[in-house]
Image (cartoon, rainbow, N blue to C red; front, top):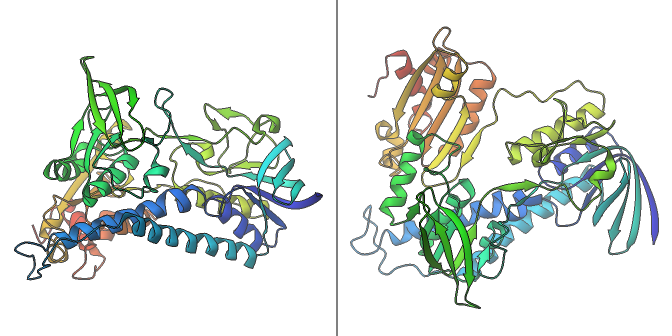
Length: 472
């Protein structure tokens, strides 16, 4: 088979950036083709955001049930500890992924997007071949949207194996390791490590920095560090992985790392999980033949996601930090609209960041320190969940969590909202909306918030910043 396909828009990659771009292009009546070698959904849906949250949810449920053994809790007594069936947990997680992936494919079909399953190889900016199960397909496009995403970064001296695993493999374990050693205490490593600790594994982190999740400041991460300490999770700070010795099937591996003084130590783990970041997918599909400019490891784009080559666009992880699914989706939607003739640019006031740790972390906008570096004088108010009735009723008020608001001193415009606590990820969209719409402290303080809800902490934090919080 040697088919020739022509289209207005060709999307490469069906992740959260690519499939959103294709669906929006289809809605706008553009003749659209999308290429994907794997299932629709990309890293986020198949091996990242969604399956990891499913694992985290199951792990939390397992821990919560076991909290009711012994003398019981909340008047609820579970007579014996819950039993973990890892294969069934993984099967359930996979069923969620399958459901969502098939849903994406249905949405593509509904919007008349042609799907071609295979791997693209570009000979120039607008022409590629796709090796499919049915044969080679040649595609010529007027516009190309590159949405190829990113891949977990491997350490050259720690190649992936049965015992040295990536975050993708961590989501596929059918047997709980007795001891999980995690290299890197960033958001991916912490999410996975905490989930495995809740399931009953011993967990040790080897972190190169002197703090966890450097994306967030130490005031925010303190409740997470406290949880780790209370659950006997060890963290080796300012430590650098050096080498690993494999011990064969079922025998684990021994990691050697050096501390801040250069002294080497060894630690044995049933699995060594490497979570040291992600790199953009720029190899294997002929990017060098497309005459785009690069910005370091990333494809260089302007504020409309245009590359240096006319009518070639790039979005998502491929174009730089933050490497977040919701950024990719927003860029994909925008590019489709620009191609259709609408006037758009990518210029968000904020891109929210969330870490699904225990407790959860949210960062939206500037901290006071970041604002000061830009010459902005600020007012800051921090309100604890310990003073929120709903949090206490949910046992979510004793984890050290809070909402912190940063506003300009001169006009009270909110420029940052950060939070740590149970379920605070669900508040992140309110935070982003407030900053995107230019809310002032008075807007948040005077908006009537439902009682009892966790969101009352946002109102109270604004009131506190103004000097008149009620419940503290």
